[in-house]
Length: 215
Image (cartoon, rainbow, N blue to C red; front, top):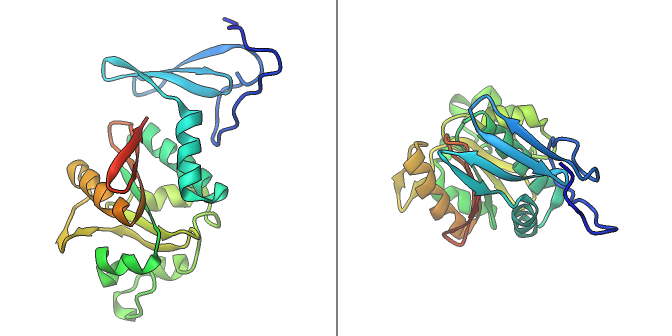
């Protein structure tokens, strides 16, 4: 199928692997191993059929909103791509980008912070990831640690502050179950941004305590 495209129109650039529909005028239908139907056009996913109904993806607009909120294209792209990969695999995850890194001390247990200095309570992974940014890490490594129960916490520079962390809201710890993950995302987004991946294959963006979008 070749839908009409205005003369001179250019496909929107988005991160991640997409079928070769950009600039070709073609439409591509993909059936995923999870039984999800995806429709690609102009180099991006436009629709997907999940849980018995169609959803408008609108990736260009939603990615642009997330990238603008993050304020750094490299960090936004890395988080967005990894979140999409985890959603494809139906693995839940939570990424928190704090406006102020100091806020992490109020929502993460001291032993979960990467800069915690008690040697007997610090794992080798903590040493290897300390002072690293999400852009420096290979996507496969970031995807691996994101799949650990709990959340990944970073500052505006993309520096990792914690991973596999059970976030606390008002002093109460929230396990990384689906309900707890959503609550943690809403609460943590009051101090920055939150990107949540559900085990149902949805990716949600939270800001100022509310969900901005879901794909």
